[in-house]
Length: 285
Image (cartoon, rainbow, N blue to C red; front, side):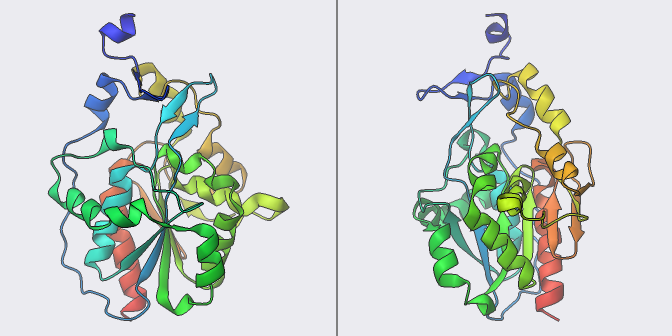
């Protein structure tokens, strides 16, 4: 009751899940982003597609059994896409089974016209994405069309995607064909899929940025999460041999070979800039 009075209690949604408290939203969500509308020397070649792997799942079960209302984080998804589109790339939206991509709409920057604009431009694609199985079946032989795979953040990236064998196939396909792989915040949870069926972790020895477990462990105190996370993502990646480049929820971004990662929603603009720069360096060469 005291937490509710202080605005620290997570909000109960109609489906029984919980979204962040008023206090957590006040300190953690901004109406506008720090997007920089940069004019890049656009890529005009044919290898201009980026596969965006979104989650179609909304509710993440915490250790205490409560459900966190999540999905794809809109800023972590759309800010990097803005930069990459400005650099001349296009997007193919996919979810595990082809169900609509789910967004954390409580985190949407309502006064940011750039973010609202690209969301509307791709709204129909988010609502009717392709399935990962269709992509694996129909697009693996079209490697000449693709430049990168992008896995946005949001806690929803930890529901089903780390256990999805098609995700593993796509990450291996990108790796073997020298495509870029881009991810941010909790999106690197998808990398765990590469260990399915006792396979060696694809990114062992890589430097990467990811949302720190230490922050996830503290957020229940302010009602951002309704309980402790089911497992620690950054610790799992570290235990598999990844070299973590950040310990805080900050603007850290990192490139190691063809892997480009960012630490948190605060890194969304920086990740977009870095990804655009790295892709153009290769494809405009």
